[in-house]
Amino acid sequence: MDTLYLQALDEYFCANYSDYVRLAALEGYERPDLLYIAKDGNIERRDSSALRLSEQKGKEEILARFKTELADTDYTFRFSVASYFSRFRDLFHKHTFAKTLSAILPKYKETWESAGEKLAIEPRFWKMIKRGKLYPEKCTVLALALVCRMRAADLTSLLNVCGFELKKESVRDVVVSYLIEQKIFNEEMRDACLAEYRITTIPIKKQ
Image 1: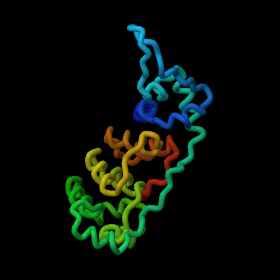
Image 2: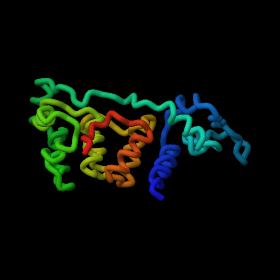
Image 3: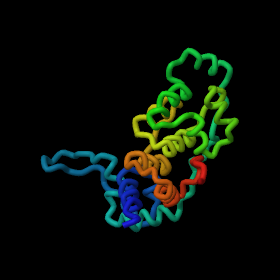
Image 4: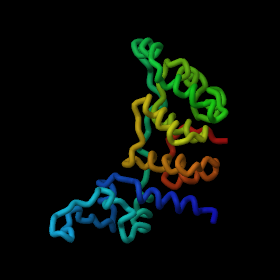
């Protein structure tokens, strides 16, 4: 019973992960024919979703093999330096990361200070992000969404202002999408899901 959320994660992952080149290299994966003859005799093309693990007969065994080869390759620096021009431009721009996050945090009864305390980021760098001197990388935005228990729409808003998006060919993004959509914010359950797919680079402070 305690692992039902992990089973649900596996099902979600199989239905959504779309790095087909990586999947096709797995032992036991059978690439389906995307072209087929319809009942009317015409040649039709199946949607690319037919390539996903959820469509494989032995998906459980294939997924197990996939997990043994996992390593978190989505590492990025947790921030990037904002140029003088960018900081000047941001003074007149309504939709910057700092301004957007300031509007979102009160929805979750959070402040910059309380949110920053939950991240594995040095306080001085977090203050620089707040002032617009640094821009957060994607891993930091994902961490924020998880520790602040955000809804999907607010995570999307934060990603958009940073020029990011959730990608279905990213193991990390698919797992985080599952956590956000299913509102799995319990620390033990959240960390178990991340560990199941060997995601180690999201900067969440350990309690």
